[in-house]
Length: 401
Image (cartoon, rainbow, N blue to C red; front, side, top):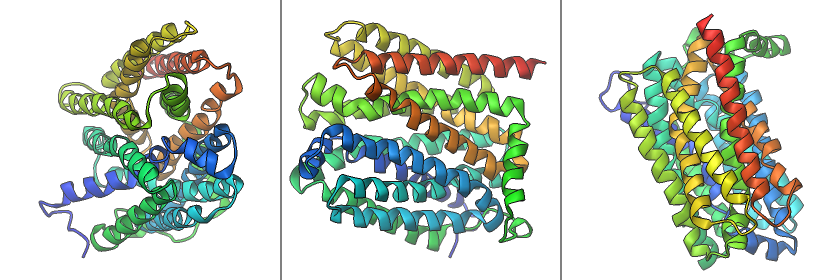
């Protein structure tokens, strides 16, 4: 029986469920990072071929967001979420039976498409039920809980990969999807008003929703700023296995602890952000987060200029870079959704689509310019944060007009 909105258990319950929904992709990305060398040996390929399964995931997730946003407006949030969870789980259970890395790429794309279908509805559930600063606060809380996924994912992945084998990681993801699907069936109610669920959509309506978004210059500028800010994180995630395990030569068992530091600061800054939203507007907090990330990008870039990069500087810069997103993503998402409440599903889809397509493209840059050092990684992360600040500055100018 879905939880009544007036129940005292409503807010904590939907917060947890939506955090789990949003955590699907971080789990799919971070659980097998430390097992990439094992997978490379299993399939008899270079580790760069396994890393492609990450960039393929980014692209598939973006496509899932693109189609899922408008479809959630037409068919309802719960229907789309459960469809996406199903695709995600089915793909995960098949991946261990693959005999080539190319088969893994295809199934990862399907898994990502399902993840995009499901995740795009998370913030739209919130926007349907709440508005204004409430959206920013709840988005930050969900983000804070969701960031525990990258904290526990490498620990789970390392344990499963080292003790049982990489196959067990994908069985775990399938079980997670099954549990979430059951919880949604039992507890989650539909947030879209019944008269707005048409259960049909034409291509004209589909494209029309996105045209409304692109007519809003403020929304587009803020979208690009957010996408570049998040892309810097995916540059690190894509390259983290090379950075820590190969370049610095650290043991796989240390890998989860390094990720835990990123998440810990992100959670702390998310909590601080949530408290400060009582006094400050989301845009002010977003500005501070982007400046903090720019400072971190400079630290990483300077550290990687040296062929023998200093571990402490790189590690500290990365922690600050990822941590700063605790003040970026929730505030940016809330601001964009509040600009265009009438097409919240499509607006949230554009956030996911742009963010993950950008991550797909930008995340590939270090591999293209690979030279055995960390400079391509540091340079790309710095450029991402610089572009994010420039577009946010342009957005602010539009707001002031």
